[in-house]
Length: 440
Image 1 (cartoon, rainbow, N blue to C red):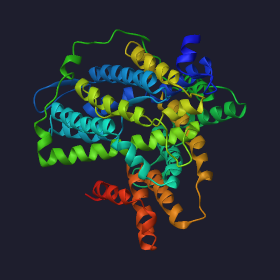
Image 2: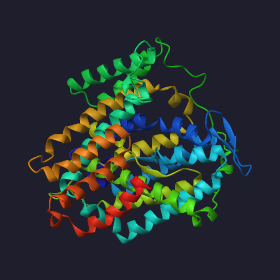
Image 3: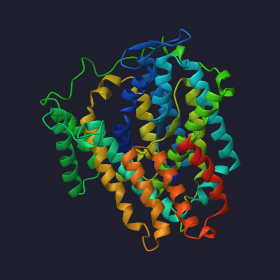
């Protein structure tokens, strides 16, 4: 234990083994939904799919590769970067490409070729340090606001996942006559009470208690077995399924650009936002050592593509572990190990209802928006960009769109107010791909 404490610098970061393990458990519990969502995103409502090239893709095979890749890459983050950040297949590109696979527009292997190309671009930029340069171009106020934007985004995910709010056809109140929605509300209240008593791991215990309460309410369904050996016979179909021919077409280039921008700014927002909550940002709003999580993120996308996963990215749900006290790679190591174990305990993991994890996300969103008070509102030209970022993230349900819109708004208001010299010249160049991402 003492060697682990020394390796992860527990004393320097003011943490303990128990805190780190509880934080890792909390992160995993809030991320476990990816094991349910990712197979649906790629395959659809059926249990399996035969793509346009005749390749059989099953939900069970996607669960296995997602759990395996998430576990291994998160462990790499722990050992190399020593940061409490967990990674898995990101939401966005999975539905974009999965829909195309289901429609027969692209084959599964062509989609993985696009993801691999995007990952290689990430890897080159990370090795050359260009990603760090881009980060330093962004104004301090924008960086600070990212944490708040993440908070609204996480709360949005929680409200959507639990059904406490509806977003189809306009924003509205959910149906609270449904047991699952009522359970989510109960879970949110329970978590708040536990936090009020300053209980360590309040979010994790909130998830567990909510899941148990869901049994008599008919929301939590007990599985026939809590553990089973994964079926590896179908996994070989998706591992190594790579077709790079499409990346040279106009459609392929556009898809690479879209997935690249979404991944880059989602990762940037997550890393900076969580870095702020950990108190690691310097006086300019930069995160020392940011090149390490960036490199792990890029490697994750490349490895994930080869294994049959869409873009692997640093998860905003890592904030749940951070809020539970996680400050070192031990948090990530715990989460990574749990993902690998999850391959054998999928029935038990799938038992956790959306009402439990969604309520936790809403509560984490509340904790994250506290960074709002640190934004400098004394100068309108400095505050307008962060405002746009937060609003676009909250109402459009996309961190990538919110960050892109916030940066563009910041530059635009500076130029229109005659203060264009206050903008870093490199930021003008960055606005070109951002504008293309939003408007193309």
